[in-house]
Amino acid sequence: MGWTRGHLLLSACTASRAKVATSRNLPSGLADRFHVIAFDLRGHGDSLWEPPWNLEQHVADVLEARTGRKLHLARSLLRRARGVRGSRCRTGARREADPARPGDPNPAACWITAAENARRDRSYGSFDEGIDRRYEESVLTTAPRGLVEEELREHLLPGDDGRYRYRYCQSAVVAAYGEMTREPPPFERVRIPTLLVLGETSYLPYDDLLGAHAAALGDLLEVARIPAGHAVLLDALDDTVSVVERFLG
Image (cartoon, rainbow, N blue to C red; front, side, top):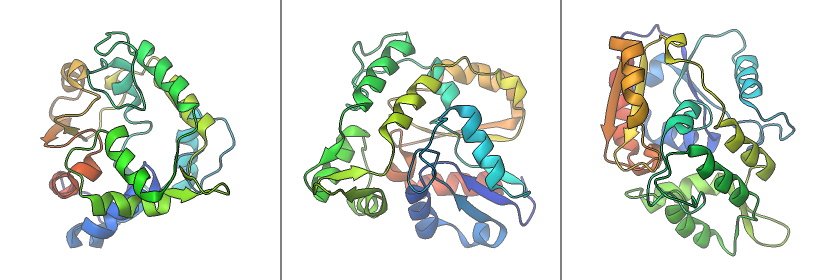
């Protein structure tokens, strides 16, 4: 595709995961052309934890951070909010969501349960327990333990009570589930070159939306399916980086 030299590649996810991904696997060809920015969403990590925690504010934060430079968005906000809004809950979805009726065609019913579950104290007696539970909670299938540990070293920290917790505001996570149920804009409003990297065993299938997305974007849309779950940067980091490298050209 021949992206212009000097553009920035923006990774809109938790900064710890993006840091691990780029430090381990950013190809030299991309490193020469892109300055990779990884930021924590509001309510997560080192970003402000104060509300509002809605999509508009998340986008405003990104635009403010770009400081006048053009960005290529490498990961969409709130786990592809459009995809979550339109997709169906799948049997065997991650335990942290624990949908009341797996396979329910009404995603709102799933995310009410997920939001309620997010209010509970998510803590662990040790760092190793947190790693073990991460495989269960995020339905990781092939993620190397060393990679998961490297990410969590910056994201799962001990509190004053000695228990380990993730660095995010639980209220912000509850608010995020509400944002995922909002009516999304039509795909036609975002006619830009787009790469979808889909894990073949993801608990959030995209098939219900893929036809409409392809019809709206045509040749602008490229879809890559890789042997991974939803967290492709952990389950299949090398494959994901290779797909992104080919897309950027």
